[in-house]
Amino acid sequence: MTTEELGQQIHKKTLLLNDVIDKTRTTFELMREQARQIMKYMSEKYPDEFFFEDKNQNEFEIRFGSDILAFIMHTNVFEFSRNHEVMRLPYVQQDKDRSFCGMINIYNFLTDSFDYNRDYDLGYLIGRVFVNKDNHYFIEGKREVGLLYSSFNKAEITEDSVADIIRSSMEYANNFDLLTPPFDEVKEISVGEIRTSAASKGKITAKRLGFEFQQDND
Image (cartoon, rainbow, N blue to C red):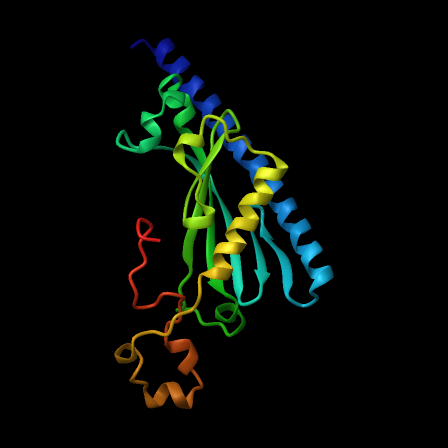
């Protein structure tokens, strides 16, 4: 490969990656605005239960009931492995550039974990949204959140589709209940934790602590 050919190849790839990240950024901003509107609508009907909070350019949170959903946009572009189901789709095989996607992660946390500064508490990734250069998307996620890979060729980012993602994520979090951890895992506590009022901070809390939590089974 000549220097000229290499330069053209790198330039072409750079344009593709920039296009994908621009589409993902547009999707994330649309998601941010839809989340703000949904929380505004809910808070007018149910005051003090629904909140929206901007964190930074790549993150925002919504709070409802005992849950927090954190939406975080990754600043890099990803491609799927050769063995991934997406790579077998005719839509992708017709144009391999369609397999390059930006990614938005959706994490579920307990509100109390933040309110009481329980830094050891765990959150769960309940979905990740992949967006490509065609502004098409699919979601890897739990139950209500997931969208089949086979829909990648026709699922486009719109205000309605983004609002559906947010509502589905809220529905899943609301139905994903906190279970008591196994007794043997929490039967001990130190004197120091009691004296420093750190009992709640020193013991990890999560919705499925001590229980198997696999995407294939949920």
